Length: 300
Image 1 (cartoon, rainbow, N blue to C red):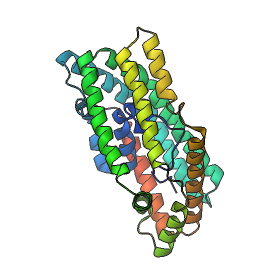
Image 2: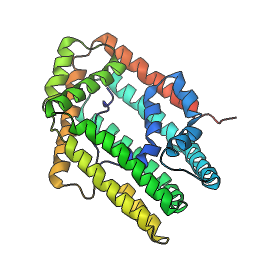
Image 3: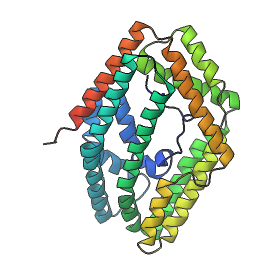
Image 4: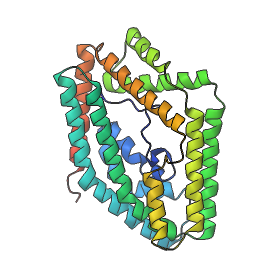
């Protein structure tokens, strides 16, 4: 069974949940969709990303044209270099699950591969992110920061307005929805099993938000200062590739414990799956791999 998407299954996190990752998040979401609509949307991804980024800036025509070129270059790279690797990974997960019981080593191996692919993506896109921010005026940077803070505030109010119990219930419901997309309807006993593991997770939501804000503060300071090259690009690369360098050791320990607990939950749930659920999972993964492979075909 594939890993369920959940905030608690945190990596030494890349920028997925942070400002730069907003430009790439749709790539990951599309890869999880596994339907024909995925192909349609992915093939329009270049202008969708430009449209999304434009929400944060008022761009001049020349800037928008350069952004379009940078985005197209990276979408082409992602299609050519990364999509085939995602397809292979999905098929490997499908084969591993089909051949026997899931092990912790198996999950950790696939999880590590997903992190490698994400890091490759960050390494590829960071130089162009740096180039884009160099093109912006001080007023455009101010606009970006204002819009980013507005987005932060909405997210913060959502989290801060919840009790620990409300956050726990939200995580549980999110996990159940993710599992049922992959497996079909879960039984009451299976849902109880998921809840028993979810109840053991550390609630790191507020520190996650604080960590996000701290990273964005560093990002904001860098783009406002905009030191001359190559210092700007070098500092941008360090910030993108090591977004957790200021996190408390205790926080990282809790995140690691949550990740291990979620992996153990997957192993326990795997032992309780019905033949129908296993067939559903296999069909879902094969369909996802096929859709990704179709996307790798040259575009005319």
